[in-house]
Image (cartoon, rainbow, N blue to C red):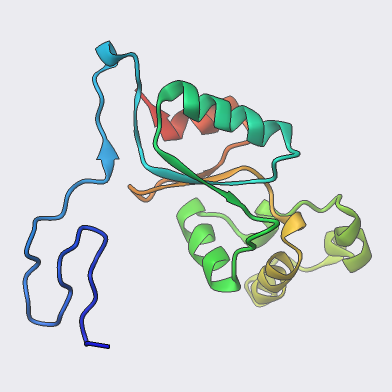
Length: 160
């Protein structure tokens, strides 16, 4: 393996070298006259049995948004991925925890501390038991992320 990697845009990321191609904005801009709203490419973490997840996907489809589905119960996020998403959401792990799930009750999540010292424990629990993660979570290529449980949160990703 070489020292450099190809970025998504195909440009070399070797130290000291400039990319061969300029970075292209990942957001899709489609005129409203085309009948499609504009939106950035997004990833949506879903549980297919969840009505809010299905509704969010329907809205993304209706808006013509480019998106990728991650069935996070089958493909759970790592602790590192959860950390990254939490930074983008500007939330703490207990803010995205489903504390009324059976496993949450078994773990006693409602009684867990909610301080900086408790973060790692919460993140580990979410990584080990992804059913505890609120859904749907949408992350956009432009850095925007939301827990899309409300129409307003979903609209903040589907602009237009």
